[in-house]
Image (cartoon, rainbow, N blue to C red; front, side, top):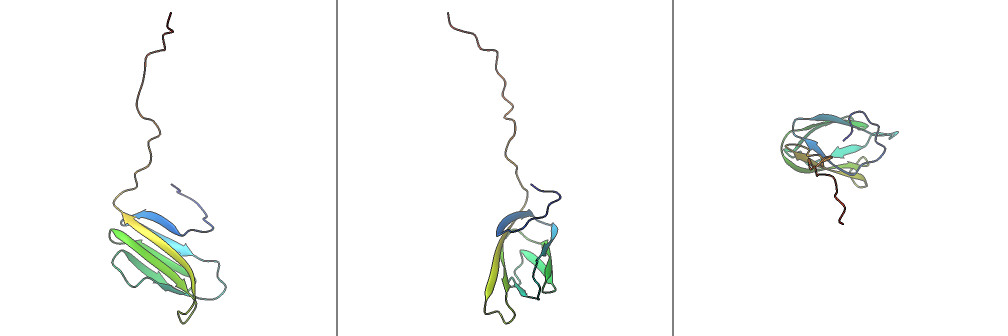
Length: 102
């Protein structure tokens, strides 16, 4: 889980419902961001970046296309979830010291 990060490439991630985030490209010319206007993500883009809000649970795909929509440059799959459950770092188990057998 990243709080402050600069990510170079991503194709798949999960985000909690209600979160807002930006997709920033290193493109030199505007492209088209396509998501089929589904209910999972709200997207406002200017061809170079996209401001995104996770509005409903489910999976959504954002496709970055060349102008005109004939050439697909990138596909990003985003799953919106209720919560991100991190793996346990401590199982909460303790034991008595080992006793050697005689």
